[in-house]
Image (cartoon, rainbow, N blue to C red):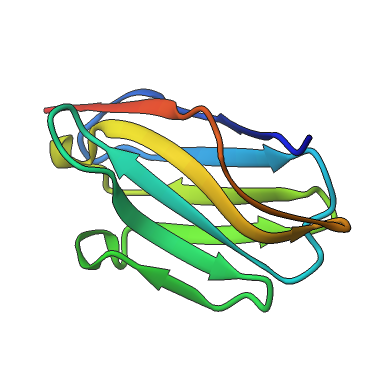
Length: 119
């Protein structure tokens, strides 16, 4: 069974930075799309950033220019570099993968990592 494990969350002051990691227990070098979502208390889960296996990326408008999604296929890991953090970025952040991991097709989520930005 493929697992997605997020790390890197924590408490940071406004204007600070964090880097989230999502380690996948299998090869991500095949065709797939990896995303970061977030969910704040009382709100719906929302898409923050997406990266394809070819390296193309897209962002939620409110994080454009502050967040950067990247992937290291050799390490089977996707990252979310978050700079200039704002209190409204506070949420649980989830990694999502849809596509091939090794020879297995999956559509799966990690368990989430909490990001809290203080003002």
